[in-house]
Length: 144
Picture 1: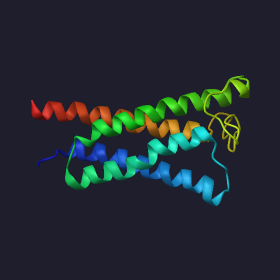
Picture 2: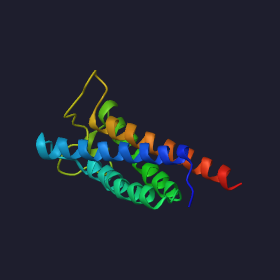
Picture 3: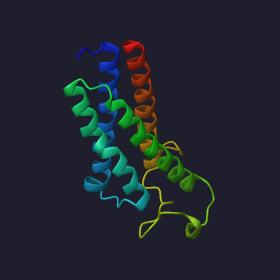
């Protein structure tokens, strides 16, 4: 199957973002020793498979993988936005959905006063989501 360079590059970009996000997540927990909260785990559930899913799509030249990556990254994006809001807005910890033993409002990092781990994950999800939508659009244009 022929895949245009634009689509191939967009899938490669999405894969690279998911790979770096996965490595970053593992770095924070396994090397820095930051204990992930429940919402961090949910975000991992939607990020980690993207590395394999998009990678297989690239190898097989299957641009249809963009539909699945859009769904996974879209859900992950919503969780990240919710998690970031918990960190940055005044909320009662008891009212937060999904938090367990580790506080979801805790900030292991706070670079420049606004960059936290959920912010980084959310940025990755937004990049993957928008790249996936771009790939879907370009794929439809090529078929037509």
